Length: 374
Image 1 (cartoon, one colour):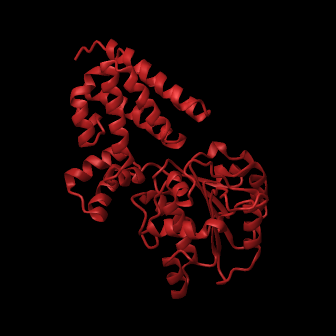
Image 2 (cartoon, rainbow, N blue to C red):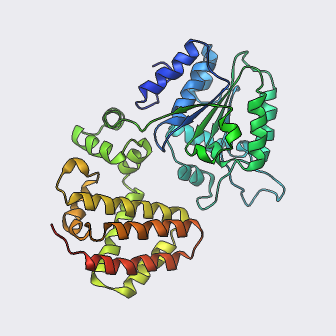
Image 3 (cartoon, one colour):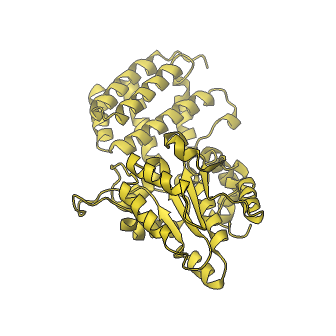
């Protein structure tokens, strides 16, 4: 579909958006909601391209995402170089943002944080941003058509910003279309949710990811099928799995080490393992614990010897062939509860060394107590 070349799958969503445009009933504010990696931003930017692409000059500018009537709002961080009174705005990081979107329209908040140079910071959309956006949108369209404002991750607006954006949505500038791209709509003000038309975007179909891996990345049919099933509808996950220096490789190493040391009851080495985890930083610690949960679930399912139920890489499956028998109905729920508590504690800034050492000691008990029926 013209304008949607970078979108993977999501044919139904594309058709719905194009129908709105074709029938001239596009609301002034829409919100695309869906899980990570489903292509919300790619859909939003493709829609912007359709709305703004009126001349050859427009097409040339949109090819580089530099159209003067296309405005981006996204979470930012405060750099040490910024003054104490400065409220960071998107324009402070426009070069970084442009580099990222030119590399592809599928990326995570963690990748954006790394791009800005603040992996362990909390990125927000400040009140300064809403003032900046208000000024930009008050100006006439430079090309005589629509102005499009894409707000990525609006759930990260602070309350002052959210109230100012609400006013913009209630009294939108003429010929302005707001496209909010949201993963956690429940965190938005109810008054903002009521001012936008929400469109829910599903996970990408496995077949669409499989075909994209073949067409765009040159994978074999067998490899693409395996990765598509593991990606579970998330294109950014599929790209991560493809990466040779993938974080998943590190996490698998740490998972294997934990389980082997727990089985051998090597408490001193488990203490060292906990210290290595502590050095990773909180965001990566939470991602490891999510990986931990996935591996526990997949190893439990592996015991049933039904390949279609397992979503593992070849290396993960090789480990599961020996390890899976230690995860069964005796201990799968207690282990899951331990990991969920650790995620909560890390999120609440608990001492990471204590959290991970406690988790490792509890794994000694649960791995040893596993009386496998398989």
